Length: 146
Image (cartoon, rainbow, N blue to C red; front, side, top):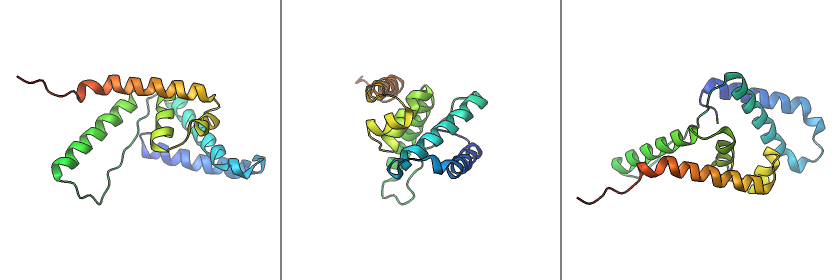
């Protein structure tokens, strides 16, 4: 969710520092993943609050690729457009999109991380996807026949 590598490094450092300091408070080892995500989420939002800027997401390209150069260029441009569109989303929309689409978390897992209900997560994902479609639809419309 952060665009600057130095911010990401600072957040990771803070997350593991806070995790180490507060691990004794973790009541169930089964919840470690969610607990760590919650710390990371809080640290990320702390950066948003202090920097007052919209974060973006970096999408990495696969190094070993058998696609043609044209296919690679189209895919790279598409990924860049999606990255820009995700960057324009509200932080709460961006968060659920990233957790669901890029981290592969279930609605229940996202609800546990964000502290929301499952229905709130579903609603937020619906709105985030609808907003992404609104941003991207004009860019991916088929050209009209002359």
